[in-house]
Length: 313
Image (cartoon, rainbow, N blue to C red; front, side, top):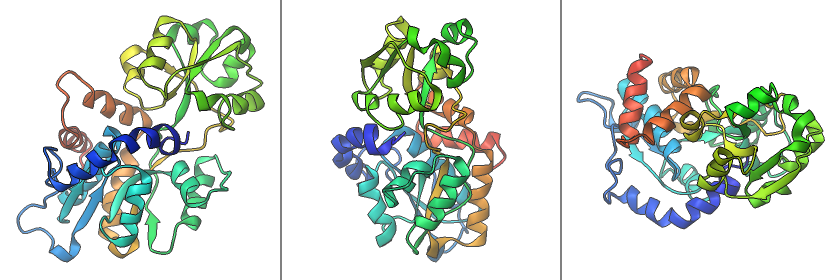
């Protein structure tokens, strides 16, 4: 889905000022560089990488993961968390106020190339590489994706023996679908699902963008299928099932580092690629769930634990 362009844009716009304040030092535990400081004897300041993140937890975790992986290789890293929306942080990559930020291939492609129509992961990634301005580039994409998904309960999945949207399609006429208002008319929303899968839901219920209203409605049976982001912490917490999208109705949204070319050396690329090679959608979902857990650990702590488990610290 257009995660930043629709749901997140609305959310981060309201708190962009807060995010920018956090970058200045405020009370944010990550504002003073988080874990990014290189160990003594690390790289010189000329090798410094300023890592930014958008104003939502997943982006901050990813920024810490990539930043800490670089720091472990002796790179001097400064974290600038919670900058805000893409409209806010993208100019920073071009003016040098940040050097690196975790991104999502599909929405980034649509941001730099408004008429992009690619949906397949490799096609999206290839188009993105060509569409970026000369000063910017992306390193290897990860398998991890965070995008819109048709989500059902375990009971619904079992009832219809559904592992994919295609499996659910013959029974869509019996089901109520819940999602944000714009999903009813978006090309990759209800119209796209109907066109690609011949899945025509009995009713559409207007809720929020994968938030508490949608989660509650799905849990309570007010809707039987819903639009929820594929790495949302509610999926493991509530035992929801993400249905596969074999016809790529939703454009690929692989996590990928976006970096200023002037800062991309072979060792830096190797460190970033090593992280991307380990990231999966399931692991990203688990990271979000960990951050949303009872103790609410910081993005820095969640990232540090993941890197240690994967031999990257």
